[in-house]
Amino acid sequence: MTKPLIGVTGRRWPASRLGESVPVAMSGLRFDLHFTDYVHSIALAGGLPVELTRDAEPSEMVEHLDGLVLSGGADVEPSRYGATNGDQLGPLEVDRDEWEFALYRAARLRELPVLAICRGFQLVNVAHGGTLNQHVELDEGAGHPQWDIDGHTATHDVTCINETIISALLGERIAVNSLHHQTVHELGEGLVPSAYASDDVIEGFESADGQVLGVQWHPELLRAPDPTFEWLVKSCTSRR
Image 1 (cartoon, rainbow, N blue to C red):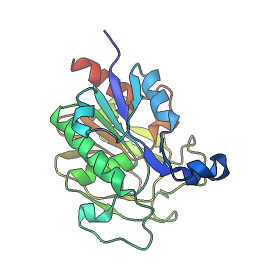
Image 2 (cartoon, rainbow, N blue to C red):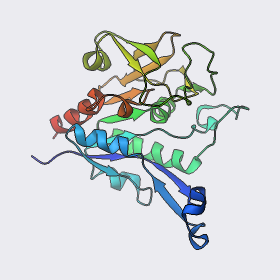
Image 3 (cartoon, helix red, strand yellow):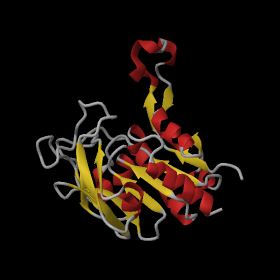
Image 4 (cartoon, one colour):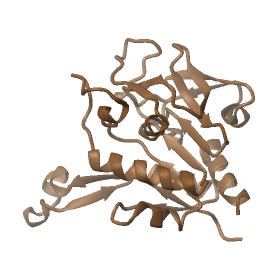
């Protein structure tokens, strides 16, 4: 049996952000950015990773995939969850929002397994009608935005809820990294909380049908191979 093909989303930036690394003649072009830890984690778990581009119809692209990873990145546009832009909102990538919401809808229609990480976790919550806290400070609660610490380093614990996918994969408690400044406010419809930080912030959820797993931390920077990526690959394989 061939390995399951798992798509990974990424960012699209102007080449000018690379500074002097690109010639002036190319500074007006754009490039797709994919952190290799995601695809490396998929490969270690036994999947065949593919870095997705937004230059194709999402529904047609999803037709060729066995699973989907929604990766980390910029804040989701607040209007998506009925809010206005706050003063401490991070940079937005509206085109990426539109693309990833479409990819997620298409993946759900095909009943593909989905692993949603950090921004992806927040985007899925919004897709299900949930809302977000636009900013939390480092000294609030568990201390979430640990951007000055190496992402391979765990900074706080989360407690996993019994009889959830997360608890089956990771046990009762796990130490995680924390590379986000936004959190779930209201959980979306059809999502079940599966992990909490010590300040009661939701750090993990799953869909009621067990096809979507969302985590607020970045598992691709921690264990190798990581159990959440192994879950994704196994889920893709079992549905064939």
